[in-house]
Length: 494
Ligand code: MN
Image (cartoon, rainbow, N blue to C red; front, side, top):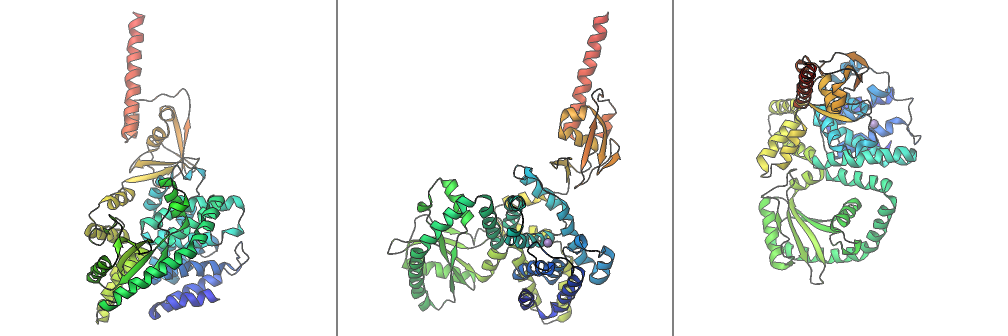
């Protein structure tokens, strides 16, 4: 299998045994299974693992990727898997399996934010989301074997749920690909129109770009600064969104591609900047320093727009190799880079200790810490914090609507959160299909069904069962109005 060779070529020597073991184990367990394409199921698992290996993520995640469908699709049990692979790998596999249990519905676009919040609340280790993204990426690449309806569903979910995750984690490569694959399925006419126009323009664009690139090389070479230049096409969905946002036709979109100059150090980024500054005309106001002030998802680069002597406009980014890795691969790259730097020590014991500490690292925490250090803009940190606020729970209605509640919320709170009249006529609740008490505490991922009866009225005891402000104020309101009516009634009798 050529993909397996590819996978093994990415893997460090010391990681080979665990990955080989996961591969053998999985190949045995899934041996009777095929994909919709007719290929053996194992091909999917290896492709997902390759996606992760390309991120240069840790071997534990790659092994987990090879095993990610095993608990769901085979007879292998959690105990057997733990015995073979240990708790860390199994907890990742379990995390992915758990995510797969959430079946999304048409409501997804309107509720995307809630869904994302809930998924983040469900996973304790951000690597679960990254494995799920790698899984989704391969499923999107092989979508053509499914029915049109399934394709639309999965594409919609990828666009509203998974591409934003990839973006948030800074994995632009995956974000762009997920977006374009989904765009083609969801809006085929727009997709093909932009693609055709893009290809038409690409030819002249490439020539212009090469001219600027050569000129740039000419000016940079005498400086003896190490550098490499790459061309960067913008993804089609990104172009489409820009056309929509700025209400412009394709012909007026300038920055279809740009250049990247990649060098070794921050000092050399600024040195390259000054070379460009003195050798080219820059578009006024186009310079942004994301090195000094990184974007909220850790992105760093210098941005500027060059106007060539032929009046060609080229967006240019200057960055170090590390910044480049991070821009392409997001958190995963940061983790890897850190590990490499730490691993440079000669002391093998020290390395082992580091590796162990890392295994236990709460990724998210580390990520948040890193945010705090590097960014002035707290926006990203704030969103992630609220999103990962474990003080909140997310509970489903039977129709798969997601209801957000504070931790400790009860069935009664849920009823009021769905609708005040449902709360007022609360008769009973079923949590995950089992009858539950009025004050039963809910947890994230529960499905709660409320049984109502018209002649039921809130009573003063209900205040003991409800913790949300919404439920309590509604109950109080009812009791107040009710007692007023009572008073009026008894007054009129007199
Ligand atoms: Mn899968």
